Structures are given as structure tokens and as C-alpha cells.
Length: 108
Image (cartoon, rainbow, N blue to C red; front, side, top):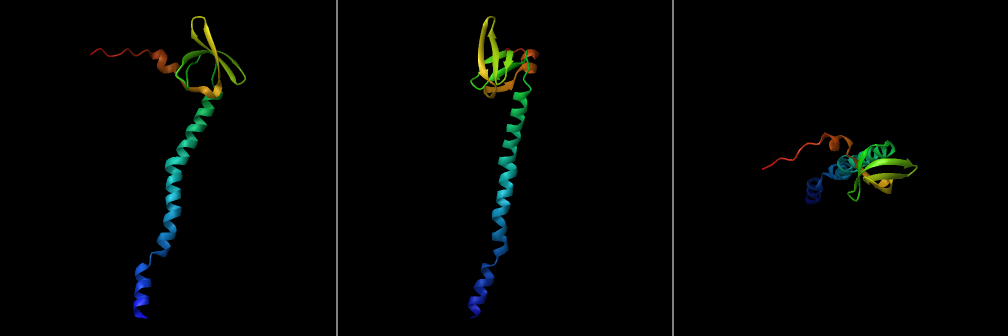
């Protein structure tokens, strides 16, 4: 009988084991899910704020200047007289500021 009581006391930590899983879920939420949601929200905001004249990059790596926006379709000027149409959701990031700064490459 005494052995049974000692074994039950030794195993203990029942409440700690019960709390470990929810704590792990909270940590995963703040390190993985929440930052991804923030990135998606920022990307959606960026795609709604695209305007004519912005230099952008598509998901496929094409760099162009926004020529015309018609609903969900964006016309990009990729060369002097070359235009392509892409869907807004295919636009990855804004290159306007970094592209126009024109920082020269370092010569080694």
C-alpha cells in the first residue's frame, strides 16, 4: 500500500503535463501563425494601394511599371513599347523607392 502511494506521488506533475500542451499551442501561434497573418494582411494592403507609375516585381520575377489598372488586372510596361497584363495577386513587392535610388554596384 505504501509503495502505491509513493509511486503516485512520484509520477505527480499532472497539472504541469496538462498545461504543457496549451502553452505549446500559444507559443506556436505567436511565432508562426500570427506573423504569417500579418504578412498576408500587409500584402493585401499593398496590392490594393498599387497606383499608376509604381515600379513593381511580380511573383515570377518580372520587373515593370504600372501603366493601367482595370479592376483586378494590372497592365505593366516592361520595356519601351512592351506591355503585359497580370493579376494583382501576382504582384509581389514594390520597387519604386529602391529602384529609383539607383545605388551603384561596388567594384572589387
